Picture (tube, rainbow, N blue to C red):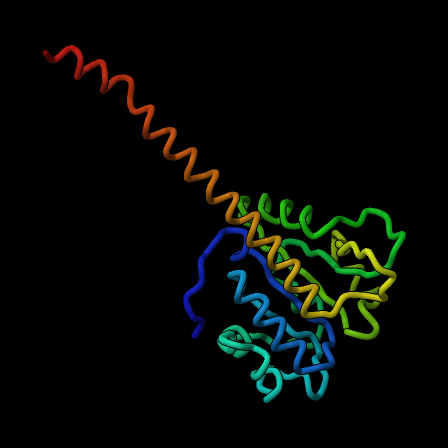
Length: 201
């Protein structure tokens, strides 16, 4: 059973998918990254022999997030993982790929999609080989985390943390805007009611 987290439309609509993860530590760390930002839906596609949710090292890294780890689904294909998603983002470390958006832009697009009742997948590839062409073909959009140094890529759990953070922040901003709008509407009151009150004396 999943523990209590702050529920926001954008985080509730987001699904993190790890394709062929190799290290159990990364699987556990991703679960922790998700839980800290209010995400709970994790799917593993053909995880390696050691990269299982019940592995000791995965559980060790999933500090206070073993509920997310334990609820993770293991499936045989990316198509199956994305079956309940309206569309998905692939993640890439490759430079020069056209049409790639930043995590912040991806979060904004997901926030809008969540309000329309859509579910969005975020697909992360294997730590060494990334995503295969057939995996990329199943994703409508692609995102890349900008890097200042000429590194080959960002660690899987770090990438998940960055994306989860951006989703959480845009969700908080959305909630604050909704509260402000509701407060403004309540302060304006009902003009008809005011007229009745004024005329009753």
